[in-house]
Image (cartoon, rainbow, N blue to C red):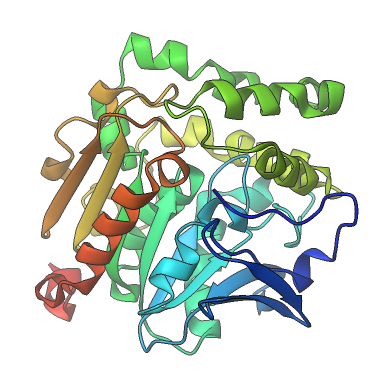
Length: 340
């Protein structure tokens, strides 16, 4: 587990980083440093109309972008940042609406195409034409969107737990509908915010404690961090707006003037899919036969003793799978792949 900062005296979020439990951390101006000299720094990027807070680690030539889900923030990748940072330049933003990033006020400010544009803009901000994209939960949905709409910007794609929209629609069942009840509940105004915030986010705390296979996946300090991120002004409504803006649209095949390639649901970049098989929200049948939606090299890693929060629960398995996939030069996307 991660070593936590003493919550009685909380430093500025932009002025702290996190080390792994087997190392000691000490605060330094602008960052924290572990005894193994693994540094996670924090900064802000102006991307279009929004200012995104990010954590970063490493300084390699290749850029890796880690996209978190709901109700999380960059801290979801605390176990991956220092490991991947040994080989790559790794950036984990707070996606728009979360934690310290800007929180536009309207529901339509969270449409998937805007979330995708944020990622493309972040890649450009760091001076790159392309990056490997890794996403979990809503971050996975956005990562699929980047690969489908802008494959030329994606060298490799790794998604955790959530299938591409075409697979979601093709595999959707009544059982999955029942598990997805909260997505429809979140369409209501104001009530979901009250429900989530009640009793100091008691339901959020219970979720993290009861939806894992490994009982120690989240410490009390971890959960306190997630609660603090949700307390940021406007963060709870903004994060729920992801559902309000996109759920009904995602259940219906898109229409409009986009190129057919962008609407056929197929992915044309090398892809890794990681799935913890005890997911309470995304059932195994919903992620079956994903390879049929991918016109590129495809790998799949199933983890039987993990659930939805897989990168926090099966840390070693996820890190090993990502490192192997990212290091395999034979899987790099080419311009021919992305135009096919």
